[in-house]
Structures are given as structure tokens and as C-alpha cells.
Image (tube, rainbow, N blue to C red; front, top):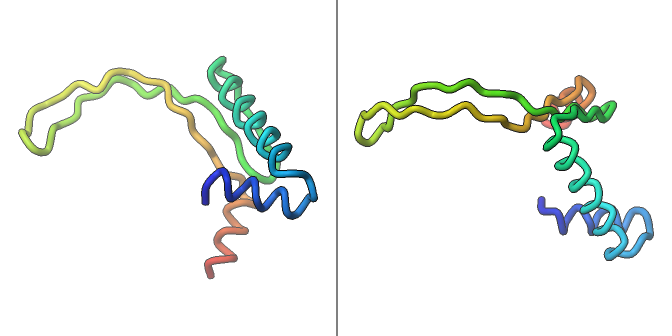
Length: 94
């Protein structure tokens, strides 16, 4: 599913135009990205939590050459889904 598909579904179910819906979806995504850039955690009840996690530097291995490579420390965005989300997905696929 793409962002355009999401816009279509929301637009059809709410009666809002696709242009307005796309603006809302883009605004939401921009807000989430900006908040995470500043290190904030975003909690959406019933959906999950977005947060930034610091991954420590580590040694990895290039499988082709078997050479050791140092992967530097980095900050990565993480989504931890809620129990309700997990249950809904599990129930739908059972």
C-alpha cells in the first residue's frame, strides 16, 4: 500500500477531497518526522509509539570479503506497536 492508496481510502471514506486529504496526510507525516528529529516520542493510543533509539557502534563482517567493518553509532526511528494492533493483525491472519 502506498501513500496515494491511503489518501484514496481516507478520501473515499470521509468525503474530503483527495487534495485536502493528501495535505492532512503529508502534514501528519511531517509532524512525526520533525518531532522525531528533535528526539520526542510520539504515542498514538491503540496504534503504537514512535521513538528514536541510539544504536551503539559495532563490528560487522562483509560477507563477500570476510573483512571486518566498523558500523558507527547511529540513531534510528523505531515503531513499537500496541497490544491492540498486534491482536488485530494476528486475529485477521488466523
